[in-house]
Length: 377
Image (cartoon, rainbow, N blue to C red):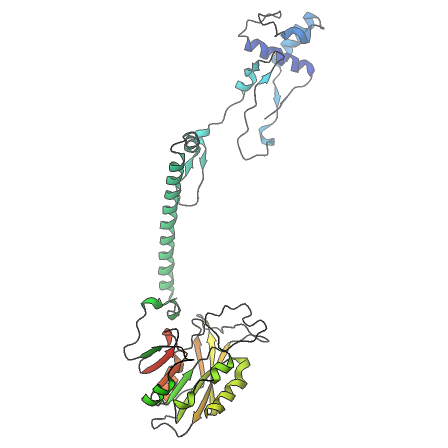
């Protein structure tokens, strides 16, 4: 509440007497009134009457000094001062009526950009209406939500048009495929099964493969295995991978094994165990959408590549084509653990028209003329 300041006590007393006269509608004459408890002259009886009258007239001509409006450090309108009470307990409404009351209806509550505003008068009506306050407020919020949703759709459309105009396209479409509605390629052979209890002997009797491609779910190191990376697949210990009867599926041909840094030694051991000889390797350099190197987590260094070891056993396949592809793949990084399409193209160029098998495959790995086995198909 704003405070009133006067130059001296005489001015304050004169203002007080003037307020009393205004409250009495001009009927006050300086003497007693009908109210026994109200004696306005009690504060000035010790002074001469002439002195009281003269000072009262001078004080009436002096303007009242109030606190400057610019000194009020508040963003809200200045509150109306409460009416002061005199000795008899009656409210002094003269000073209260002199202070202007802010127009509440002129105030408006600002909302976000593009959303409807809610005036303070409506909010006041909501507060006083016990039956419809919640409904009115809920309706206003719903209108605001609809406006925001429409604005978001408009912005998304503008962004898509701008990307199309600038030639920026999302090439990582495979990472956004809804696998629930995924349709396998027409000539692919997907087999959903657990590789640990799959009937490998029956498959070996039905077909011998020229090329086998594997992307084992290697079990990472026990100390900080993921280093902040969430693994979205189940890992297998080395002993489980060793138990796979790969040697039954191929009498001669190639095997391609994707390997991580701490499993090189184990991969070479598996090749020897299954009857293969290491002959080559393929390096995949990962890139971003902007064709820059995509660096990932590593224990000592940042990793920006993956390696696929190539092993061979027996005689060469009859359709073998030598020196037809490079051992370096520059390709964009896609979904987690998703390998580049160029790997399949290299294999099909190396051994065209062969029998191809992929183990630990997923839906995104399905390809025409390939047999794919995995528990995520």
